[in-house]
Length: 309
Image (cartoon, rainbow, N blue to C red):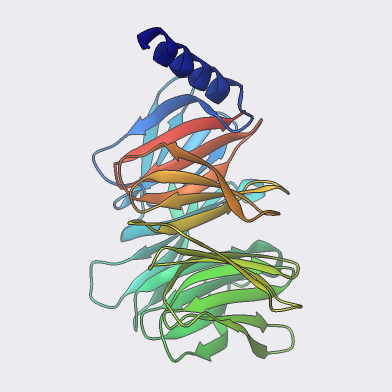
């Protein structure tokens, strides 16, 4: 009986190794003393936010340098052609937030935008339109034109009936979700706001692709909505919930959860193909790299590198 059990264990392990979705080469890129809210990779360079600094870490030489950004960093963008890092932060002063344009060549801030009536919940940069978008704790979303910086102009202000913690920009449309479960699209060329779905509960993250909406809720629901037919598919995750969703490819979504588990979600069947133990605490960010490599940060204070084979 022991031999049979051992044989079954070996076979099961071999199946995992040969599965196309088995996570391999799991590696800790960064072990920090503070959770990393945002990061991105540029060839051999890893940029990440740590408290009030942006760090540039060279993956080959294992050397790093940092840029002070003032407030507690929330998000960052790299403008490659300008050699500029754009960061959104919440200042130490109550209700003050900022967006900074840091010049990597001169090691100084070229321009800073301050907002004095609310903290930032989410931030989007739209370089092709010379705009950035802020979702704020005063229940507003504002569009800022930065083409004439150091002068900044507020071009659009949306007043909401609840906080919005998640913004997505796609094909000249801003999508956002509110704390009462409403998902909107906003055409900022025609100044038209449209409610596209009302989930009726707190949404933690969402993705939208053509006529398909996928969202997660704090109650552990993963939901897929066909926006044309209004058909609905739903998965319930017990004793956990998804708080980050990343569109991996045409077949899969990668979902990071509160307890650190990664769920590989099949778009077509809307089923979980794999559960992967990548982190020990809540996942904060998931980014796709080259050759199916995935990078993720977490409240466990690490950035992990792993693969789907």
